[in-house]
Length: 234
Image 1 (tube, one colour):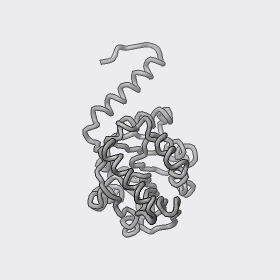
Image 2: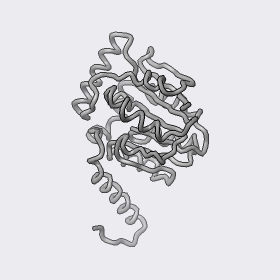
Image 3: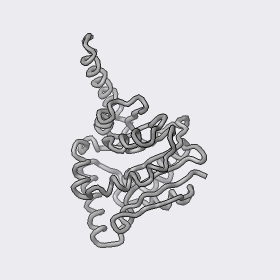
């Protein structure tokens, strides 16, 4: 129970604390250990990749229509959410991440923008009645096994996406060069140790999306190691 305070500032602080507590209580639904790396994940990504990860993720943002309902799975600390709110003028963003610390960072970054519904969880927290115009999966599909992508994650998101809706996905591709193989191997080992990710190797997420959706455009970065794609639900 919280002590009642009259100050608007204190009330705001209490609401924010309450939100975080609710998030923590619901964390049993999540299957990510990214809580442990949330505060320094973006800095590490920038140190290793520079701006290329952000560049790739924003490649097809201009293709998103205004007033859209957008579902973001695995959005992280919220920098991408800020871009979506500023540039796409969405009606609603459903922002799902398995890390309550990532959700907390995103809430702070966008100052709890009323257009955003935050959910701590995974694909099981995507609802059929979300009726999304756009689905975004930014560097999240590489965390899971091929089987889970095929049987759970992609079908769940597909069911929530309207016919004619857009799917933006950005992630790593199977390496073409030795340095890429070494880096990918190191990343999997590192995040299995620090965040307890499920996958041991990269699933063929790109071909899975190509199988069920119409690819409209794509862009490659870092000698093909990173791919951004834009698909449409037929």
